Length: 483
Image (cartoon, rainbow, N blue to C red):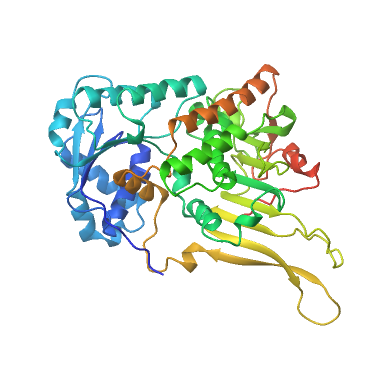
């Protein structure tokens, strides 16, 4: 099956923070890949912007180096690479000052969609939005894209939202979470709402529990000081894992539009019940085999910031009452993997002999490293000698099943093209962000007020022992984090 590529209209995209790591690793390669497959037209323009003085030729050279390093296809696409580089320009701009804005205004075309990608510190979101408006650069056809972290807590998120809304309408603001651009995440909606097979089973009557795991094998080396101000809760749970939770638990929207989908996601967040501290496990990786500990990397020998967190979450509504959701994320774990496991209840009456180690039916949605869906079933083991049960899996790896003839598509590629089209379905709305912080803040305040410290854990495992007990005490078990 070949993916259909629908070209977008010509656009001007201004990339603030164009010399930064995210721009070089993800945004510029993502745009190049869309150019290669014909979705980004030759008439489009990409204008890099940063505080440093740089000639256009120097920025083009930097872009070339970035693509050769981070794009798997750039070296084999020499002609396309040269044509893509023709779309590149550079304008020096002082984000919080006056320098460069008039030059930027002159570089943009009238009557064309303008997208402003803010790959910068959140402290610059407000000043850039204000300058875009005050210098007449933002138009009715403009969109502004902001990266996480969107706030440090509810109060700061409200300030950021207010600053953006003073200069842009809500339908022009795209708060990006790259997890929502992953193929498996989007397939979750198709799986639920385009198939009569699953939706009748998608409730507490049939689902025993849900596990959401985002595990990373690396630590916080090189970004420890930043990470120590956030921790796993703010860095991952409040946004990435919360978004996955919402897509699993949401009610069917009345129609597939951005606001209908996001309305249902907000309802899920508002239905989340308070979490007792006994249902939260926090951890911090320690030194092992000559490798430094979290505190070594953070530069604070007394840090109480968590590099691991596991939480049992309950949703107080009719669909999910009695079905717990277990969220888990951490650094320095056994492997880099992200997955969602929907574990179904056993039949009400099992007529077959009990099978040792039987885990029952489950649907596993793999987000990384190999995107796809696995269904775990119980069948009769082939052969004579009695009726023995065995577990088998039905596997659909997207790379094998659907995209042999299509270019690989990173989450950023898809989301940037959605920005150009003005489709906000996979982006967070302001009230959604604030609702997530309103649920998150009391949990953080709870362990801070109680003076609770994260438990140490060895790198290369599954996290603190107490995280295992979070499920074991209720007769459940985490899926193994597999290498």
